[in-house]
Image 1 (cartoon, one colour):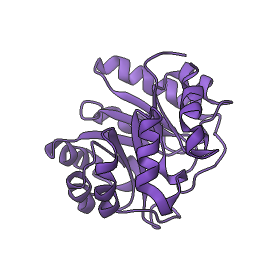
Image 2 (tube, helix red, strand yellow):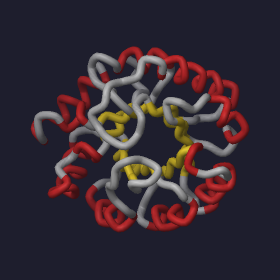
Image 3 (cartoon, one colour):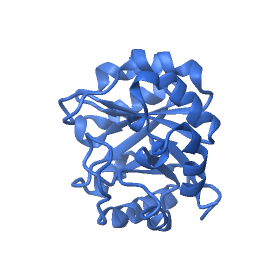
Image 4 (cartoon, one colour):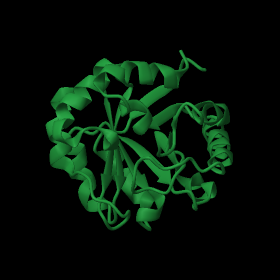
Length: 220
């Protein structure tokens, strides 16, 4: 596998009673990003964490905090997540009719901006905001819960986004989230992804296995 692959463990699969310890453990195990799934029970059918938890976790890792906002409306909360210590803030194209404005807001706060697409959303939705984004996240499951099976049709979308990124000519992360494991990882990389969100595949087996799990996902 390519050496430029980044692993972004999703703390949705961590032990929530010991989140700080878990974040420190995956940092030590070789994670590149810490992927924080924020869910509101409205845009997606689950409720997870808010900016205060992100702030509390920040001292436990010097890695990039990759914060994925699955919330709607999203604009009222962007500033709070930026202040809490997020490095990348990713919003959903489906969560607001004005995602161009939302991306501008993220950038104005000095953060990297990401845009995410659900499985049913076509790639052309983001063509006119590629100049603003630092990361594109393709959801390869329907968002809301961890541990779901990878949707094979996501591979074509990943390839389409890779083409958009190449056309843009900038360093833009192509992230994939959902069902990433040892069975699916190579096809996702082959399609063009370079940042892999892996929850279950990272946290299975407990802290003693985290480094081994991350290394296996990298294929080296």
